[in-house]
Image 1 (tube, rainbow, N blue to C red):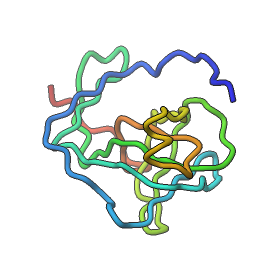
Image 2: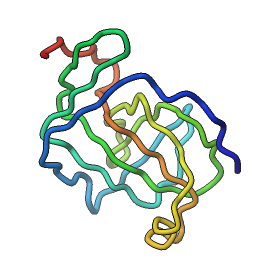
Image 3: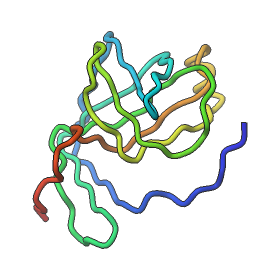
Image 4: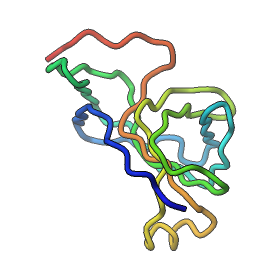
Length: 136
C-alpha cells in the first residue's frame, strides 16, 4: 500500500514527564469514519502534562488528561492522517484530532506479528469539549 504525501498538521506538542502507562490489559478500540478498526494491541501513555500550540495562535494550551501513543491493528486501511475516536472497554473515551495510519517498521512487525498497521497520535481531547484557556 502506498502512503500519500500529505502536509503535516500544523501544531506543536510538548510534554512534561513522567508518562503513565494506560489501559494495559484492557480492551481498547479505534473508530475511524464511523468504522471500528481491528485493534491488535495499544501502547498508550498519559504524560504528566500535554501542551498544544495550534498554528497561528502562538500560545500553548494545556490539554488535561491527554493521551499519546500507538495503536497496532490489522485489516485494510488507507495510510493517511485521520482523526480517530479511541474507545476503552467498548465506550467512546477520547478524540485523537491529529492521528495517522502508518506502515510498521521491521521491529514492530516482530513485536506485533499479527498487526498490519499502526495508528499514531500525539495528543487526545475529550470529544465535544472546548479547548482550554491559553496558559502560557
